[in-house]
Length: 385
Image (cartoon, rainbow, N blue to C red; front, side, top):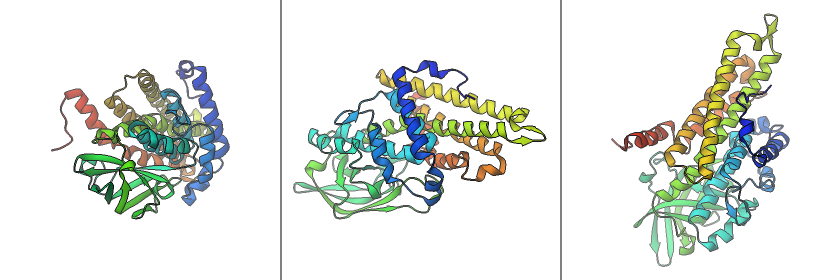
């Protein structure tokens, strides 16, 4: 049975289908057999990193420096397939590539790019992206982390929260206020005064790592500053890369949940007939398929626009908001179709739904993206007051 009732397959190129096939095979081989155990044990499988790197998935949309240089649509397709396995695994690829590596690629010096991007693309170095703070999530302009000049060095003090990969990272992209405004710094995590502590226990994203970071008198040289990063626009450019990936990725979780519910309903018999033959079940499945394909069409449209160089921030917000809403609704409906069996880790929908609570929150909440869209419609910013 297929969920592609609109034949979106016909809209993809041979290269895009090949990327999908490779990543889907990786997920089937390396993630699906183990993900329930990883989720239950709250374990991030570091042994998976070289395998993701070998497929060219780390920084895959960056050109040069050992990166694959794939298109935006190919990147989106890869994120959808990874998240069909688990949001936590896709999150690793997003943090590494769309956040940390993009910060270096977009805002770093040539020396910084040469030093970090090839190693990160190969999975030999892991990065994290320190923007969110305990009291500055949706409002990063209120960040309190501060970097002050001290001779030829910078000294950074502050705290970050919900930072993916921080406890296993080799380098952290730290955003801080300075006397000249927000700036970005590449902080090696072995630097004295840098501490990353995993946040536990979690009810979501259990096969991933999110941390608190403490920065206490962290001293870095001027060469650690990202020279092209000035103001909040710099981290937002990286966030938009991640948000674009989420617009595709969340739909992988939704698709997997729909496929699980469809297969289960076809096998489960109630009152002497397959559950899939019941009108109410078919109505649920039809609504799930309809909303999934609408969101997939939007994601593909955004990818084509991004590859053409015309994608605008509010469009990315529309994609992220629509995909997360769609995916979490599908996963909840799929769990309901599975009945009591749906609460078991034997089946994916409830795990996906729990993960998507985090995906829906990070890289901009529903409220933030709603206001981005509202500003695009009205020309008026309503973020304050």
